[in-house]
Image 1 (cartoon, rainbow, N blue to C red):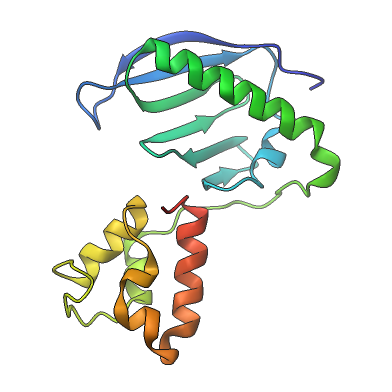
Image 2 (image 1 turned 90 degrees about the horizontal axis):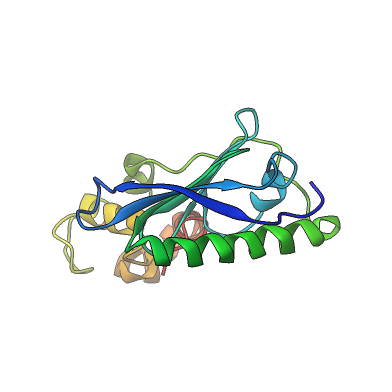
Amino acid sequence: MTHLDSITLTKTIPCLAEPGKIIVIGKPSCALDEVIPYLATLPGVIAYNPFACTLTFRRPRGFMTLYSGEITITQVDNAEEGLKLLEALKEAINATWEHRAELIPVTSIQKAPRLLDVWELLPRSNCGDCGEATCMAFAASLLLGNRLPDECPIIHSNPAFADRRSALLTITDSQGGT
């Protein structure tokens, strides 16, 4: 890849996860195989498979998945917003490619944490001090990026949970937590 000239909007379809929104599908002007391992170093990555050459990012709303020859973006308001997102993505891809000498490409599979993985790091006391009814509900909110680990008073203040807090901060940072 030398330079990505464009990402053409090829299709929009209704977004089943968010009624009233659309999924935008774009086609890059060149294959993304070479740049995807460098893009996998960026924040917000929730899944990366170097063997299938797929990379998924969490967006403030929805997800963005890059394949070698296609890009999908979920929960987009309309085609106009989709075009703006594709243009911004093109610029980000080109900037990453231009700075690839400063990055170490990712070569291993990265998977999004599962709900139970996050729940196991929580106190599992169901105390409700975080404002959620249960630790499972809090874990779901963490994965969605709606909450931060330190909103659990036990995780935040109890030194016995320092290692779990660190793991949760890593997970929520990689999830693009707010």
